[in-house]
Length: 384
Ligand SMILES: [Zn+2]
Image 1 (cartoon, rainbow, N blue to C red):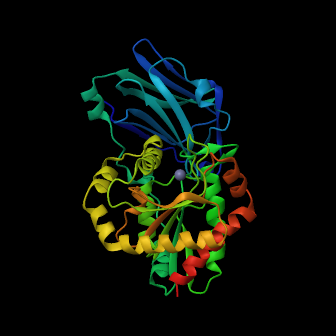
Image 2 (tube, helix red, strand yellow):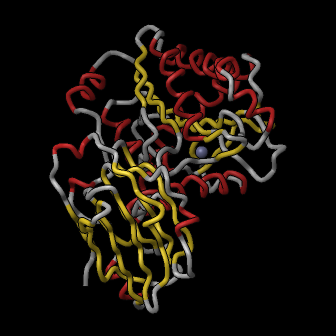
Image 3 (tube, rainbow, N blue to C red):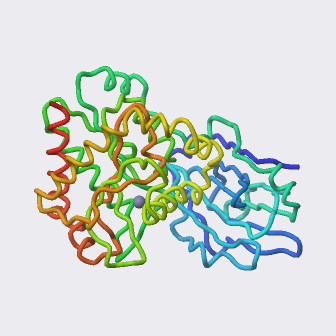
């Protein structure tokens, strides 16, 4: 049985070329007893294939392939593939995730040169739930890990410095776009805002801002904390702008790690955010262990009071700056990114993309500037 397939093709030109995937030669369709994924590419690229359980999904990663011309819904047919998602994984890499409606294991996978360039063919066969579980898991090859770290010399220089280190975490990114409403994508908005906030913070004396991502790339939640630890974060600020079904919900909200499960609204928000990792094909097994147990208690005990103190100060700064606030602006939730025991952490919903007025404010530099000024105010007090 094939557990996963790794294929490396060494080519000097590969690093910069973007190899187009051709929609006319690409399909995800049912065979008689199988599910078949066929992708036509302009040339052979490095790729890997594996399946993950709970929920069952097929993950395909490609280096240097451009899926710009591919509409995931248009290439999918039949019943065995419930959904197809495609997006950037990290610079140079893309990921395709196929949700499987039933247990199907990889029986055949290969990319071969053709007259048109290259074709990837993956065939999955029906299997029992047990067989699927046994065959699933992310490949161990470290060269393919999603985890990227900062350059260790640079990171430890930041950690050793006297600076107050603010780690800004632009929510979502890459194959996890976050909320999308009215043409605004949460992952893009948080990235723009993070860059603006970093500028503002870096102009403060003895403050150093570091971003967990600087491009439209996917960074797993646990990696975001690893990056913060690497640079010796003094505070961790995760930026979000979500959408809710209720478009009346509006205004900025500051979350800290909850003592218990948090209220129902907070729980829904947490689920949305853990799902981002799941949808992106990250194996959450270790993340679940972590969230469930001791570390969370440790985080609450060590940094909980400090996080709540900072959150309270930030909410009054935001109010003073005239920022549109949520009717309950100080909230708690069990967000994975708030579970570090080494530094206080806040998750800031800068507003809701589902609310027309919020969206209008967040879409402008001037609108964001008020929020940024309020955060900078709070940080300048902390850094003293
Ligand atoms: Zn979000």
